[in-house]
Length: 506
Image (tube, rainbow, N blue to C red; front, side, top):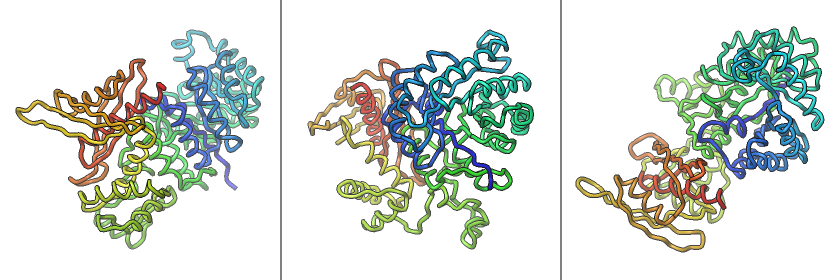
């Protein structure tokens, strides 16, 4: 039997630290439910002392999870941080406090401006203090990837003696090469005398594009926990992508003497959910979950796959939830065909919601030769974004050209059914459109980012707009909208972002 590798998800904590990826409490709960469907072992819910919102989220996630997974809260090696984490986890069925401190030369002397002796003392104290509140204590040796081997081993041994059940060896800056990082883990396994009393965890960043390779090198040399995120979300270039490292272990389990308990068939759904909530688009050629991960355009490849899938696919798409279908959806497809394809994609939509989606589908199909899976995903996402919102878009009309002054007329409907119409001019059609919306939705905001992409290929592709607006207090809100008309997509995205802002301020 191979070793069980625990999967520690930090999408809600480290992942959220990606600039612009902040999530509200309800969005975190939605992702938490998906993490439970994935069957992750540990969910790092947040950093409670950092804000009242994070504190509340940790409490809510702990209640949602129950005993189905460990819920972890991050702290610094500071008593007030640990107190806050303990309070947030007070009613948690399986709580873990994750505390730690920097151990590299840079962190000791430049960041913390102290000495190795003080670092060791603080590490032991923080571990013992956290142990007063919970049995399961994880200690992180920040920037371990650039630390002195002997000092790192000394810290690891001391915190295990102090009660740490897991010790995290992060390559915080993504600096290491896989072989060197593997040697570091091996050194700890061979030179820390009490290492058998705790699990060694790896937490790697992707600054040099090697986070997955680093994590696997750690596992190969004795680590039994991997810290990762959906889509590799995280600070700077991101963290180890869960889908990549889990599938690598699944493909090479015997060589690595390792396995996980992850339900890999939930990966595509998890990837699209996190992308939808954060507004971070997954690149088409992203491994495992990218739109092109199981697509073949070369005639030679197509011929090989048709004859035997494994000639060019090492992973069965169904293993990660990327189900295939021979049904081509068009304007001539009926309800039964649409329902069949939606169910194959993992959606069970009934009643009026299905009828509304079918109407949107027919409208799109009339404009396109073929409706692809990505189009359906976008239509479903668009439908979800318009439910329970303060305002919905009813109509938009643009007048622009040379030498005309760009003018926009917008009609919005609030949740009580009241209609509001406004007209405005601007420097361009989008500026005029957004000025008109602002006349109706009177809430201070600043448009900080605007991007457009086609959902599928071809000149008749559905267009998807992603924007970010900043409120008066500096909070960032992401909005998305999709439609065959890019102006309509832009309007939907802006209204969606403002609805999020309004909901957060209520």
